Length: 317
Image (cartoon, rainbow, N blue to C red; front, side, top):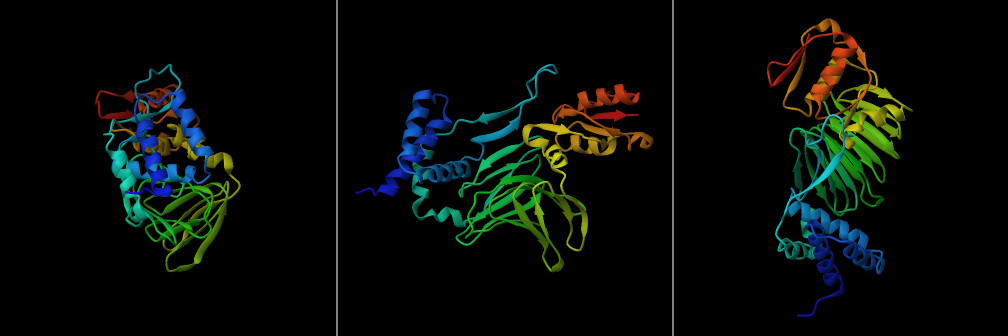
C-alpha cells in the first residue's frame, strides 16, 4: 500500500503527540519535533489539529487544573495534569483524520467544580474553560461554532476570514475572526469580555441589540436588552479573567460578589450570615481553591467572626 505525503505527515504528527503525552519527552525529542516543523510551514497547523483530536479521543489527556497541593506560603500556580493513554491511540488519530470527517461532528466538553481546562482546537484556536462549564464545539467548512450551555470560556481565535468563529449562549451570539475574548453565561444574561481585537455581539431576533466590542470592553446582554456596558477598562477585564491563572482578583468587589466567586470553584461554600457587611468592598489576590485564606483575610480586615465548625460551610458573621 502506497502512503501519500499528507497521510505520512499525519502519521508523523500523531506519533509526535503520542510521545509528548508520555513522561520520557526529552530535549532531543523537542529538537526532532522542531526540525520536523521547520521542514513545512503547514505542519504547525497539522500538529495542533492532531493534538485537538487526541484530546477528543482521550478527553482527560491534558487538563489544566488548579494546583491544590501547595502550602499557604507557596506561590499559587497552575499545572498540567497528564493522564496515561495507550500508544495505540496514535494510530486511531491518524486514521480518523482521513478527510477530516470528524471535524463535522460536534464535540462536547465539560469541566468539574474547581477545574480549569485549556484545550487546542482543530483550527489552531485555543479555548480555556472555567470551573463547572459545559460547551459544544462544531468545526465546519463555512463556520466555527461554539455553544455554551453553562459556565464560562475564554477563546484565543485563530484568524480565518472564510470561517467566522461564533459563540452562542442562549439567544446571544458573539462573532470574531481573529481575536481573544471570553463569554460567561449568567442568570441575567451573557457577559462578554474582550482582551484582543474586535468582536460583534447580538441577540437572535433583537435587531437593536447588535454591538461591536473592542479590547478592554465589557458587556452583558440578554435576549431583550443591554444590561451593562463598559469601554476602555482593560485592567478591570484582566482582573476578571485572573481565573485563567488559577486566581481571583477582587479589585474592589463587594464581599457578597467575592463569596459568590469563591463558591464557583469550591465544594466548601461561603455564606454571608450578616447582610450588613455584604456590600463591604474588598481588594486582594487569592487562589481560587483557598476559601479559608480569603475568609481569614476578611476577618482581619473587617473585624468579623467566622464559624468554620461545618466542614462544608464557612459562615462570615
